[in-house]
Image (cartoon, rainbow, N blue to C red):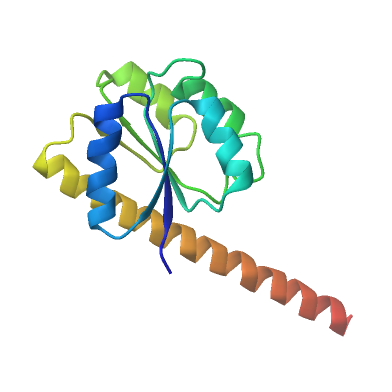
Length: 147
């Protein structure tokens, strides 16, 4: 199964570079230029992971995370933030939203490898979580039938 990654970044060059990295790893890519556009895509598409920039027009990464955290998808879709914001205050503010991880751009060769590993880990986590949810649902159904 090919995983679908939603890349949310208004910088067309960064967006293209990230998409090339991810295509090389055989991921399906969907792009959004801001948080509002991304929220609409999440409602209509099957997304496995979100790669999010912070500084964007219309709806930035912070506002996206505030709105995304109100959706039913929040606990099922891991978010990795890739941003130029490298000060502790911004990173802490982002991590408070419960994102899976944070990586600082620009993505040189080493950071590209780190990002790919973070994505693989996040997708393994997501798949394990979905399997656990299915098993829990099945156990609850079986215990209800026995009662």
